[in-house]
Length: 141
Image (cartoon, rainbow, N blue to C red; front, side, top):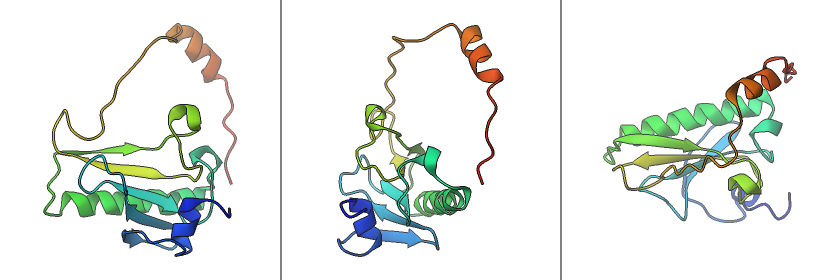
């Protein structure tokens, strides 16, 4: 993807504060952090979102998420907890259409990433269950 900012980071066309990488993924500090240590982990190959990600790429990405989380927890930053976030689609808040996972250290309840819910369109749980229970999940190869 020629105009993908994350692909440009992978290709070293634009600078980033890269803190870790493995064969298939890269981790760098967010330039608009929600908290100190806020890191973005991306696959090195262009994948639009988690649903379209092949298992090997997903494995490399999640392995690096875990490594970065451990790095942050064992650093002098000493967060109280960590939020993990990946948005899929612009309606869900995805801005860069390259799969990525945010690792957001949490230092206080009212600081950093905060979850706000709006339950306007909730359906009956039994109806939702019946809709999903017989859905056959295709094996991703």
